[in-house]
Amino acid sequence: MEVILELRGVSKDFPGHRAVKQVSLDIGRGSFFSLLGPSGCGKTTTLRLIAGFETPTSGEIWLNGARIDALPPFLRNVNTVFQNYALFPHLTVRGNVEFGLRRAGDAAERVRQVLEQLQLLGKESRKPAQLSGGERQRVALARALVLAPDVLLLDEPLSALDPQLRKQVRAELKELQRRTGVTFLFVTHDQEEALALSDRIAIMNAGEVEQTGTPQELYQKPRSRFVASFLGEMNWIDGAGIRPECVRVSCDGGRPGTITHTTFLGPHRLFTIRLEGGEVVTAQTAASAEHRVGEAVHVSWDSADELRFPS
Image (cartoon, rainbow, N blue to C red; front, side, top):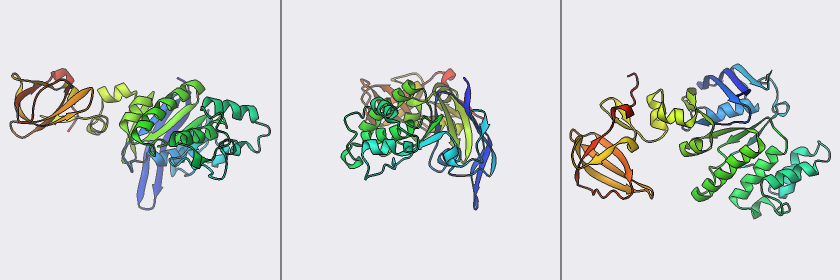
């Protein structure tokens, strides 16, 4: 895939703190790329460096084959959707979407096309206070996309939505990216969002990129204990990591233990099992599994499912 955005050894220092440490990334044109990591890992600072809101202490940022890290934000063909959407409350939907185009001449057809793409036609005269959370998010996306950016930067744009709406808007966001072909760079701390949306993910920790890959690569072949633990659930037993879905629960065969807790999660059930010796294991089974708290069981797994990392 052709690279549209490249970071080469980018670092950012603040007084007494290095927020981003030698980050190098290649982001393909037309892809949905996510920066995933816990709070304070440097992902939002990395986004702000690309947008031009911060200046790198060292390193280079390239867009479409041109170096942009010394350019002001308005000379970079990227646009940002912020966590709080930053809509103008006194402007209508159309006024918000048109705002950045006021110096670009007559753009009525372009605005109409974007409003149609975002399913906002018929709501052009409403103001943000009259919109739902999902509609406000679509207005923020429309305002960014109407400027035809090479890369759209999204700083945790779903975090303000309730869980059910979040899933709905997440699906719309992925479909929108597919339809428009615009490169999306998405920042999130939510692993489920990153797995569901992304073509590729960079997992960040303490200012550094721990690993980059497809969702499947990162989940199935993590290169560090941090990546294995952060992306999905993990049991650590005898120096190996075992995913809960790889743990089998039976009446005999395997390591003995006692069920201490059960959790019903719709399509599956989680059992927490304390093994003889004190280790605790989580097993994911079919929802129909009938084991009870206090029951003596055995757990086992295939050695091929063990994940091992240097100590």
